[in-house]
Amino acid sequence: MVTTTDLYLKLNEIEELIQSQSENQNQSQNNDNDKEEYLDTADVCEILKVSKRTVQNYVSKGYLKPRKIHGKNYFKRKDIEDAMN
Image 1 (cartoon, rainbow, N blue to C red):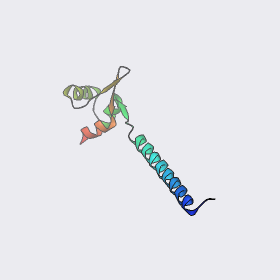
Image 2: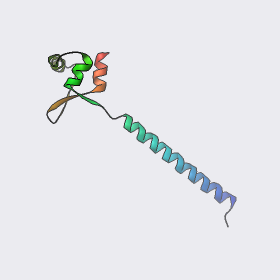
Image 3: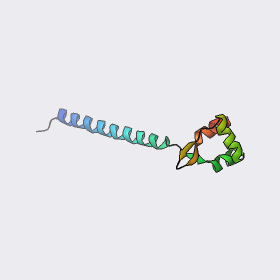
Image 4: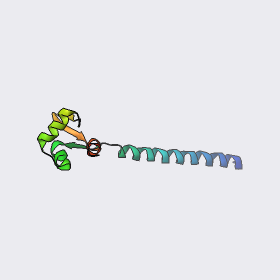
């Protein structure tokens, strides 16, 4: 025989599971938003409206920090936006 208390306990378990799933889904969506976008030198030139040589100078002076991926320089979009401010 199932009592009212048993039903309330089961209902609480179900609510906790739903809440946990909801939190996991929100965390997963936040992780997707945290993915970084990388730009190549040509993209940086276009955004900053400067030449490739100027981008190289910015790198030499430490204004921009490239990441080498397969031998090619890439820049985080956030770093470029920060440099503009």
